[in-house]
Amino acid sequence: MDYYSQRKFLYHFKNVRWAKGRHETYLCYVVKRRDSATSFSLDFGHLRNKNGCHVELLFLRYISDWDLDPGRCYRVTWFTSWSPCYDCARHVADFLRGYPNLSLRIFTARLYFCEDRKAEPEGLRRLHRAGVQIAIMTFKAPV
Image (cartoon, rainbow, N blue to C red; front, top):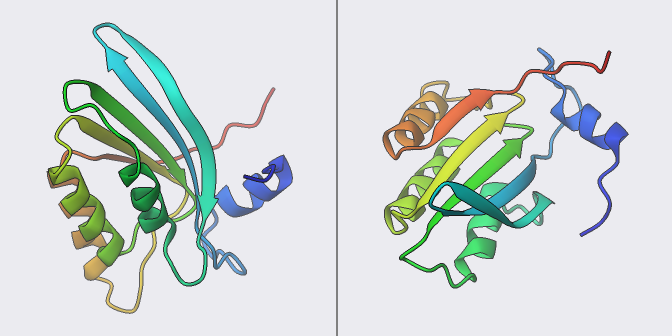
């Protein structure tokens, strides 16, 4: 993966009311394995939409190639520039049903809404029912 500059990060992850020009979704991730009271970082990185494929689906394809041990617990944390659309939320919830030993936290910069303003909130509720912790990121500038 290429280097992700601070300037690019701040541009895409800034929580603004009108996110003009921000048509891509970026996803930074951390994958940890929990062993009793300790956890070990297994991987971290970032992805963005490619060729019309939403970034959430790219991550699911990526982690599907892993040989996750069903006897161990894994925690995935996403930091996204946009919250998932309804279809991606559905795919993520379905994916998590197949991996009860994997938990997901999503911190997002902005909520995504399409023309059907009822679909995206329902997708987020579906993720919540699947056990996903979802929160809006806040930005604190260094002092």
